Length: 255
Image 1: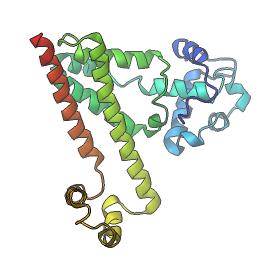
Image 2 (image 1 turned 180 degrees about the vertical axis):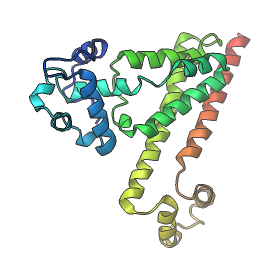
Image 3 (image 1 turned 90 degrees about the horizontal axis):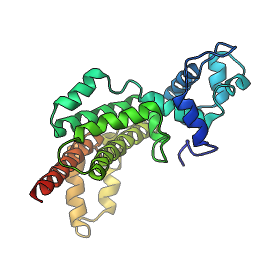
Image 4 (image 1 turned 60 degrees about the vertical axis):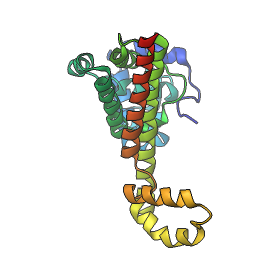
């Protein structure tokens, strides 16, 4: 289950997201400081280890002091996710999106999100539910939609096309994180793991019974040095999505 859902009040989050986060209270604390500290802990230890007490300890205040600024962990997670998008697209990045053709612009957007997930893998634990639209989340959406503006898509198709690209990037990024975690837990990379289990697999999986799986699986395994390659899946899928969007645009021109 997404970490965002437990005890979450969207109205409280929205007020915090769109209000001032830099005005200090009597203790000198700010919402922005609390959020930044939460992001540091999530980056170092993971979302599961994040707590209001840990944030307070890191800052050097009592836990109850935080609740004057942020009601609880659920709202803190909403704030952290929005904050992660704050500097995603600067003026130069927006200019790149506007000045390139839609395909190049979407490649740029996909790579930007791919890099974001690699930099902050904890974000993958927060996506997937009903989004709380803070200012940076809204700006991200607006900026990314500009890649598809004026190319012949309906508003609905613009939204769906962008979502398709972002969902693909997120899926591949999650695969990459899972593979990395498995490597750390087992002490073996994908190629080492498969080589160590190859004799058992060859004994159990009869090529005569599973001819296509055996042939394709062996070819993919040799190409990727493992069962899956997130980088290859990312590029392969992205190109196919681009092809599909291109066909949709051409179909609209033919009407």
